[in-house]
Length: 77
Image (tube, rainbow, N blue to C red):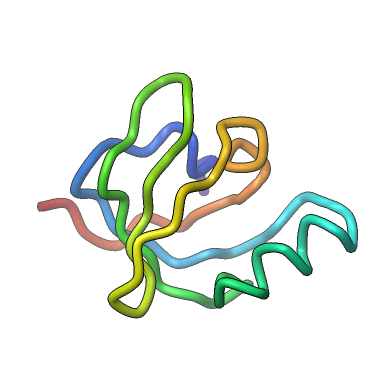
């Protein structure tokens, strides 16, 4: 299990845990990202926003928020 912020471009995984409060969980749920969701990293850097692909939709997630989303990596492109 690693933070979303530490994943590189092309990596895919499943959201295992969201370490945030109700507000953060609700913001992510509004774009369809919940525990159990499958996501792919489009652009991942060691700082700045992380662009992810979820259900054919690109979503930008701030670095701080991405660091609190724990992922179980499944595949690397």
